[in-house]
Length: 496
Image (cartoon, rainbow, N blue to C red; front, side):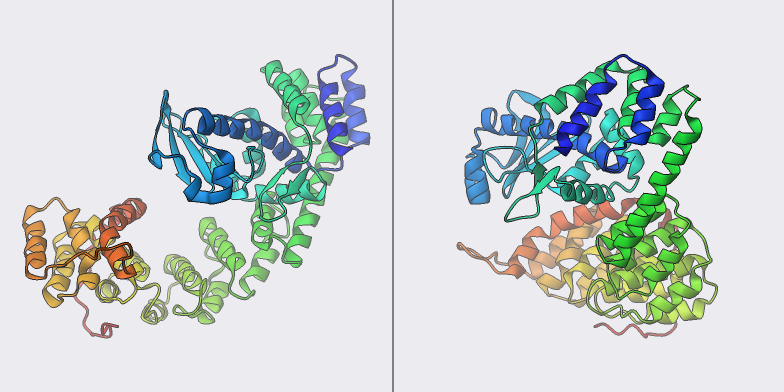
């Protein structure tokens, strides 16, 4: 079986013997899995042990029953607070959610999240695993190399597919999660032996050779006799990955991730693929293409991005509003025709008014007040939440006036809930007093009973949502606080 072959090869790293012959054998008889996949496999074997740690804490420190949680979800949680410090080990915070539990280390930030589907911790959720990688500040060798090979982190999911296709991961019959298809005790023991051999590069370079990671091998080994063969093998690996990624993109198989991964290996086809992505129907792949273009800081893509913008409706179905904003963000940075951009900004009337206001404040300040005023009065809560949070973060007289003008013009509880919550976050008692007076004049009787309306839910949650958005927008808004947008000369911005 394949996993047995991999185990035997890794065990060979620990044997003394002729290094040249060992490397030659690895070159002439490579494993049928890419080193991107094999490093991910090693990381998952280690991560299963971490998930066992979560299971043990759920059972023995939090009095949880994984079967009850798997069967009943939130109704199967133990009779304790849903979130808190782990009794007896306050370095860890627990958080029960749905069918699982997340443990977060208060010191390191390490975040291990597990959903239960039986009485084990065997099942890996792709999102939880990538979130774990994102949470790490100190890396073990397995995760360090996985992240080096997948700099965007999310592209590691391509390795999940490779391992599943090779039979090393098996999918749950009813959901998307996967687990290792073999007993891991011996494999884990071998990995721990490799860890124990560090910091010596001798065995670790042999391990890199077993996995076919020839780029890593070259950085570790002093052996020069096989250098040409190793360089050829490294080029072959990269070309094979490029071929696989191009095929995935063409067949719409993890297309968005294939595009990201093509840039990670600096493929000669990356611009060609990027251009193809911009011509696709609106999708996550198009959004990813725009993210890549924006991060490149190159101005050469203006014609293609403008073409995409022209066929994108800011008030259309998702992800069109997001793509529209991304196009405008790039063009505001690199496109000279301000009149075209102004006309495009004015086209939004529903989904993206608040974000458009921030973009205007950054690049087209003459348009900012119109957009913020429309966002504050929008029937869509998303617009009101973001615009109120942004104006609170700006915390200047003009921003205060926009928030207060809404209170003066409306007695609607829902329409003003985010505005009032934003003012309460400001360190200005005189402004908070105005909110208190408004609420005395316009009293609200909270709904009672077992069921409440969504309107009541939004009213009760306004303060927390504003706090969360202020944290989310803080770094972007801070450099903009010195900008004072002028009063618009034309009132094109009638409230909608």
